[in-house]
Length: 97
Image 1 (spheres, helix red, strand yellow):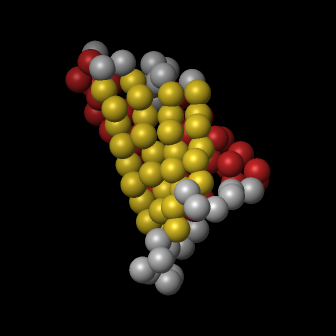
Image 2 (cartoon, rainbow, N blue to C red):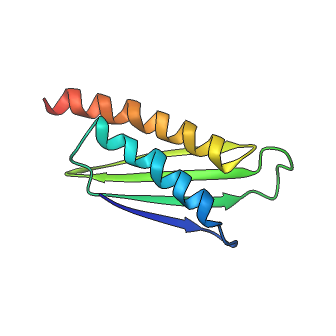
Image 3 (spheres, rainbow, N blue to C red):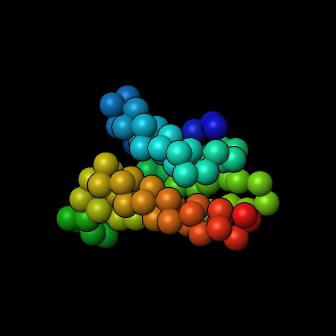
């Protein structure tokens, strides 16, 4: 599984990128047919408090799954997005099986 992390209009530090890759890799425990994952990190100017947005797009054979979460930190947003995708992957796996 290939993981691509993109920080939009800022540079993410390596510690954050490693954290995201570690969390996203856990999705393979639930579905081992994931082709690649794209992660986009954005800062929202409108909200001063909850301004960190994480978008995660998973490519699996025949389908794309997507989750977008906005929180106080990128770590929290990543955790919530991965959890949402875990549920989507489980639902997809039930349909395929």
